[in-house]
Amino acid sequence: MRALGPGSVSSLLKIVLDVVYGLMLFVVGVLVVAAIAALLFKIDPAVVKQMSIDGLPAERLTQGPVIALLLTVVGLYVGGVTVVIHRLRQIFTTLTAGDPFHPDNVRRLRLIGLMLVTLELTGYAISAGQVWLFPGGTREETVFSLSSWFSILVVFVLAEVFREGARLRREAELTI
Amino acid sequence: MPIRVQLDRLLHDRRMSLTELADRVGVTIANLSILKTGKARAMRFSTLDALCRELDCQPGDLLVFEPGPADIEDEWV
Image (cartoon, rainbow over all chains, first blue to last red; front, side, top):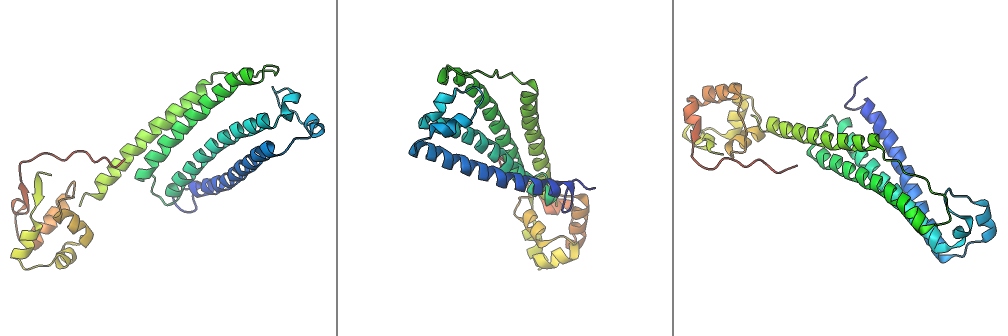
């Protein structure tokens, strides 16, 4: 099976990414609405008792602003992942068209790398802020993931590979 | 770029249009325009051969060196 072009593995992955992207947008939308609702409406303590969030004392869940803050943080995180998925979709569109070294792919890969760095650092910040915001809760330790940082570096290296590929493509276009 | 392609002058001298040359050489008008406007980065020997044959000239008639600053690497990515 071909890796590039119409009807290839790339086009299959593009379809998968389209579906995931749609789902992520839906989740972000739900989180935004829920965050606004948590600020506007009073939460019934009876409903909250049935809810359980790891590391967060149940009594704090009755406070609308706390819930809104939680939902906003989760929404921002999911939004970041959505941006990564969106850029991946754009890259796979060019792969499906059989044009992997499109100049825009360099910027897209760099943005994916930066977004992954941001998401990773956000994870550490959430972990650190958990104790400060919710002193009564149990804290989940965030482990420094070497494989995550290795993957991020690979993305930046790939961006440079694509930059070189795009340069060579440009050279080929201007060779008559 | 310090190397210039004198396609305009040669075409004028031979009373030949760019379209006619493109047909004879087998290069698209778009690519000949890139050559003519000095945007080309390189020229294949096969293209040079065809141009010299159809314009009845030497490579030195087609290409001239004009001292000047070299091109700065494009900042397009």
